[in-house]
Image (cartoon, rainbow, N blue to C red):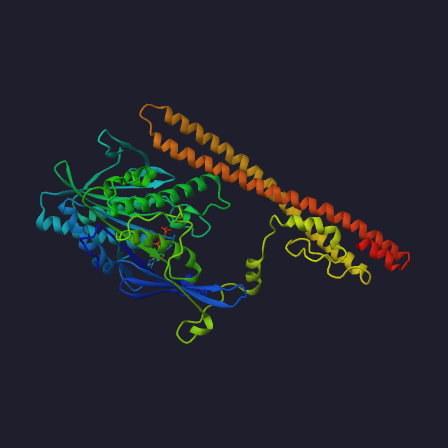
Amino acid sequence: MVDKEQKIQVIVRKRPLNSKEISKGDQDILHRTSSDTLVVREQKLKVDLTKFIEEHHFTFDGVYNEDTTNQELYVSAIQPIVQASFQGAKVTCFAYGQTGSGKTFTMMGEGSIPGLYLLASTDLFYYRDQYFRNIKFTVSFYEIYCGKLHDLLNERNQLFAREDAKQIVNIVGLQNKPVETVEALMKIISTGMEFRTTGQTGANDDSSRSHAILEINLKQGKKLVGKMSFIDLAGSERGADVSGADFKTRMDGAEINKSLLALKECIRALDQEKRHTPFRGSKLTQVLKDSFLGNCRTVMIANVSPGLLSCEHTLNTLRYADRVKELKKGDKGPREDKLANALMLPRQNANVVRYNVDDTEETLPPPKPIKNEEESSRLLFKKPNKDDNKFKSKIGSGISGGKNTAQNPYIAPPKTVGKKAPQANMEDLSEKHEQLIGVILAEEEDLINTHRKMIDEMVDMIKHQMQLLGEVDKPGSDVDNYVRELDTVLSIKEDMIKGIREKLRVFNDHLRQEEELTLVFEKNKAVMDVFNLDIHDDDLLQDIDD
Ligand SMILES: Nc1ncnc2c1ncn2[C@@H]1O[C@H](COP(=O)(O)OP(=O)(O)OP(=O)(O)O)[C@@H](O)[C@H]1O
């Protein structure tokens, strides 16, 4: 059970494998080893393609299995701190995790299964009716989508956060509805949920790209005496999901990434009782500022999917949660965050055990091969690098059986060349040439499409920047927001230019290789013509080889 005296608690909740995962043959790789420990059995392949298992051991304030109900989770982890909101505390509960890991299931519940919103509200009303009759509740429900605030209780109207002279953050125009009963509260929440933004992504069509913030305020007259907040965070992997996405989605991803990193920093600061809390790092932490100051209780629920196919995201979620947890032990003092982006480039957690799959077959479920052979070798395939220049300069000599050009995926050296098999050599060259032409044509199309898309996105970015300038020019504008957004736009632009330049470089390389290959081809053809003239002159071929 959660310790109600601790300011921050980090717990993990594992959901069951769903029918889709079961039908795909996915298997459970998460094992709860005690009430607060968990092992992830990651299946890996060595370079020689033998399988092995890497075990990652984690410890949290609580670990809840797939058979834990929302009710049990609530009683164990949230109920102990709900009462604190009547004693002036700001109680905040975050649901963090990959898309589809069970955040909304935990917060909102599903069908007849109540979630934390309903369970906590029922208790809040119960305590109020029993002991604090002079307290009234109001509720607000809003979301942060693409760095902008939208009121879920007012048709998603856009809202603006302003910091007043006392550095209190106010959300101007946010609906704060009085509620008299649990039923009325739940009706309001359901209406808000309908307005919640969901985006279409490749991974999961229902996946949410917004943070939803539900606040139940405890008021005595006009005075706020306590607060209970639930934050259903956007899918944690969305911050990294930028490949192939359009400008708007990438902006959104960058914002999610930034907000989750800023959240981690704020929780760390709260935990270490630092004087400075970096609220301004994102819109999310800015609007939650109040929840990180003074008398507060925070529970972070790290939701995880159990399947092998989600292993990477699950490890990222656990490492993120572990980072928050580890740093609150306090005994080590503040640690240098070596990987600035601990969300997307997670540090390797120290407690890792490796063993061969064969050693464990008796005790562990048999591992499913991660990749078939073809896929594995594709993954192991080394892409051409700058050393390919060596290859290019060797193309000419390759015809005489040059030693090493195998790093290049498109043109391998002819295997048997020279005196005995000029015909085979020509066929080989011709095949390589055809392959290269195919690659060049595909790259050309890709380059032109990328260029076209880049121009469209540049136009969007210019519009966005004009809008930013328009906003920042207004009196009382949000300069922090301007700086953040400009920074994001510029880094997206930089990435975009880097990406297209890299495509251009590879394309140019292949064009040059094709030219060189044509030359070799011509040269070899001359040899073939000699053969066709029936001049079997070994010395002539030797000369060409040399
Ligand atoms: N503990 C659980 N027990 C049973 N089913 C669960 C549990 N957790 C999640 N599920 C199921 O998994 C699916 C995905 O869960 P959910 O929608 O809550 O994910 P999410 O993390 O909120 O995703 P998103 O970021 O897309 O909102 C749902 O169909 C839900 O019913």
